Every structure is written in C-alpha cells, then in structure tokens.
Length: 409
Image 1 (cartoon, rainbow, N blue to C red):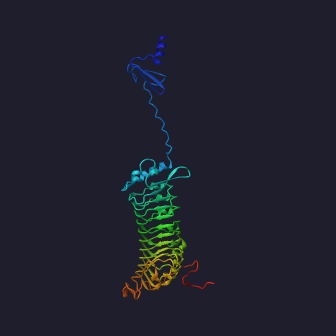
Image 2 (image 1 turned 60 degrees about the vertical axis):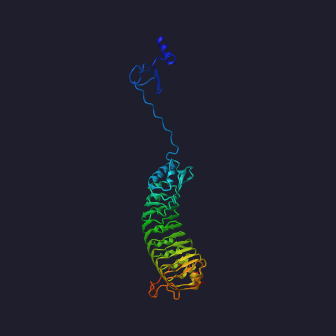
C-alpha cells in the first residue's frame, strides 16, 4: 500500500527525486533517475511503449500551397528558365524578375481570366537591348495575346512550339538577330493578325500559306528572303505589306491587283523583281502608298494606274520603265509625291510639274530636260520588244480617267 501511495505522490509532482528527468514522446511520459534514460540505465516508461528507445517525432504534414500547379506557378518556372537564357541585360530589366509574383516583373503583363485566375497575356521587351534566345517553353504561356521584342539582340531561330500560342494576335520580332528560314511556326497561329519580322537575317523563300492567313499587317522587309513572291499574294487580306530590301526575283504576281480596296500600303522596293507592273494595279482603289522602286521592272505604265484615286506616294524610281508619264498618272487627286527617276521614260505631261512635294524625273530619256541619261543609253530601251500581259480575267470594267476600253450602255 505504501508503495502505491509513494508512486501516486511521485506522479503528481509532489515528490521529485534528485536527478529526475521528465519528457513526453508520442503520448508517453518517461522518467529517468540518476541520469539514465536512452537505451540503458534505470529508465521507467509509463503509458505504454515499445523497447528501450523512443520512436522519432512524426514529420508534420505541410500546408498545401494554394497556387501550386496554377497558371502563374507554371509561368514562374517558364520565365525563370527564359531568364537563364538571356546573357546580357544592359538596362537591368531582369533584376525585377525575383519572387513568385510574375505579374510584377518588368515587361510582363497579366489579365484576370474568366476562370478568375490571373495569367500572363502580354510580353513587351521593346528597346531593352537584351541578348539571348527564345526558349521552347514559352509556348506554355498559352494565354499570350502579344509578344513584342523589337530592338533587342535575340538570336537563333523561332521555336516550333510557338505554333501552340493559339491566342497570340501580335508577334513583333523586328530589329534582332534571328536567322534561319521563314519561321514556319507562325503559319499555324490561328488568331495572328500582326507579324513583324523585319530587320533580321531570315533566309530562303516565303511560303504560300502566309498569304492565306488572316493577317492585317505583314512586315518582312530588311531580311535575306529570296526566290519568287508566291502567286497567291492577292489572297492576303492584309492592309499593309512590306517586302522591301530582300532578294526577291521574278515578276510581281498578277493576283496582286485583286487585293482590292482593303490594301492601303505595299512596298516592293530594293529587290530583283522583273517584268511589268500588273494591269490589275488599277483595282487598288484605296491604296495610299505604292513603292516599286529599285527593281528591274520594264514596260509602259499601265493606264489603269489612273484608278488609284487614294494614292499619295507612288515611287517608280530606279527601274527600266519606259514610255510617257501621262496626265492620267499625274492628275491623280490624292497624289502628293511621284518619283520616276532613273528609268527610260521619254516624256511626261506638264500636269506632273504641279505635284506638291516635287516630281523627280532625273536620269531618264526626256529631250530638253536636264540631268538625263546619255543618248547612247537611250538608244537601247530594256524590254522594248516585250509585251506586258494583262490580268487574265477582269472582274469588273475599269472606267478611270479617260480609260473606257469598251462602250458602256
């Protein structure tokens, strides 16, 4: 009886022998006397237990991260991977790319989706002078609607995975060091409306499927594209097309004239194009800028040019065109600037001198006018024996200026 009383007093804490140690592990209370415990000594464990050594404390279950596996968590991984692929950041833009809040990163723009989640919908690095490459993982940011990388030093190719950016509407890769063939991934982006590849080092031909896309603006100028312009050029719904400063050869496709009033600006300048200006040019009734300069075009100007009543800038300089620049051209009501310099024109109408902004007719074969070609050069006019083919099928009659080919009822 005395033993149980002593034990009860001991457990109630009223009696603590010298050197006693109290501890709890896994719901057990242990007492050790005289510095014992562990695997030896006079340890006494009360409340159950197994063996002389206590079991380790179980690891607490971590609280789930509410953002785990969300759109922004995935974006964080993608952007950190891209950051490691950028080797030079002179403006220090990437110093803001720290932490999980990717929407606070400079150059990154987020939008709240219908699902309620935030997602990256825009990337704008214009003018940051970054040097690096594009990574294939960028295609995982599939809510992107615009990518603007103008004026940097990105190099390499455009990843084929970019075809997965099905919501992308604007892609501006201009003024970089990209190379390789035409970036075919862009041809599979269904909602793309603005494609800007100018001032890079792309090579090879351009695919026909480019002009079947729903693009409103196509900028391919100042690259090394070569070969003939696809014959389906006229199928493009674009309002602006720039093909300048490449190595395109062959004739301007006859379908060019079928682009109609939707086309506002097109530039062919500084290529190796030959042949005639298509008669269908007259169907471009709303065009404002048309530049054929610095090619090898020959033949007379088609009278149908007189139908382009909205044209403001018409550049025909540095070709092998001949004949007379008639008042049908110079009396166009919206024309501000006309250049026919460095051709083989033999005359012009006085109406051309009235153009506001000047009329450059130097280095032609016009008698009595200064700064013309030497006479021997004018004795052999390129393409003089060749006829310029008309558009095979004219969808509607042309009645512009004084052009009436057939009487109308």
